[in-house]
Image 1 (spheres, rainbow, N blue to C red):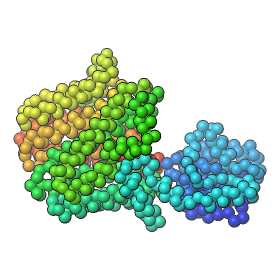
Image 2: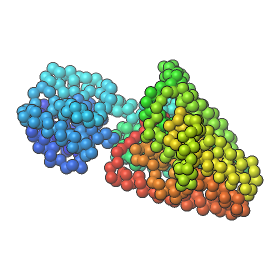
Image 3: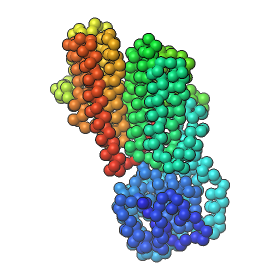
Image 4: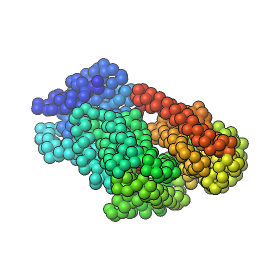
Length: 605
């Protein structure tokens, strides 16, 4: 149980002790600095500890924000400071110095908690100070100030602020105006009944899978039910994040589940629509796979660009300045958020079209919308990159190399091409990645199944992929290399399966791309959580993007169409088992050892 040490003379009528207990703290009273240091030493090292001034006046949610957020090792608000086990030593040092300086005398006007915070700042510790807004947190020095502080507390509705802060600060139009106005109350209902964000996330996944099952029936009633359930799943998807913010229940495992389940829900729904269409005699598996490829590549563009630039120095450009100016014009903000077709708009469109039209029309609309938004966002990021005078870091280059997912073949060839790569212009990496990928995709799409040309193109792709990563990816457009690799691998699988022209080949290809895409998403989430890339043995085991592409082309050249379908199925199962088992092992282990809690407030997916 976390421990709060209440310092100084208790104030008659103060509710601070009961408020701390309501937040889950075991409260101990200390008369001064010496007593506080003694009590601090008694608290088990694996527990969170807080030092709070007994004269504190403020909103309960201010205390919650300052003392219970699991994302920050050290945090403080006026009159209170807290440390998680990872930062306990820093707090103990600051406390010892204050006790020595003050000689253990009783508090006068200043606050011991605030002096400890100042000492932590002087030591260079990273102390988080939450944005309180209209919430009150103060240590009044006299009765008049205390009365004024209490009046300020009474003037602000703590619960209304808490509910408002539960909603993501930046979100899409549909989510902001059609979901969040009521989903925040669902989040509060869940919090009051002890439900966790992970439980709500799981409920959202189950609801979406049921929706996919309804779509797979191929009936009009099933399609209508699927659309309704998909919206219900999205409401729960919003609720889990709002519940995490409302109750400050952040965790590494929760962030991974939320991100992973979003992709699982959407792609499972695509499969359900394809199955439902097949029951009606319409084969749309190529469209379903195309939609998954396009959506995954869109996300890789987002991830890759952000990783390349988030810690770059001199990170400015005229294009970014124009975007900032447009943000001051309210209606343009919402138009630009809708253009990128975030998850709220995308799922609303899919749900409505599923209920009212056919799977084929739904996929056509999805492909057109995603293609337009992908063109818009990628073009904007290319312009920013070309006009930005930025120096990219070694960390960014390492992240892009991890996102590239190069296997042993590309790595071995890259070692032999490093000298050549250093002499080539900066545009070489994305240019050769694009050309090599285009070559293998074009030959897969334009030549007959079973011919040797896709295999020849795959060998060329291996060499161009090696040249692309032969030197650190620090160029202005090097962030395009990972999405070019993703598109090349996924589209090669799609076209070879389509060319096989045998029943079941495209569903098998869908499963294989889904398994590989999971691996690529998992790589992103590990990098975002500062956990590093997946282990090298995993990348080598599943071959890297160039190894898998080469294997697929070899199988297409050597096997008959039915045998190729079977090979795709076996590969899909094998890759899925390897990446899922390792991924689940990693994230569960990270959660058990107390990895830093994370929470994504970035762009809607």
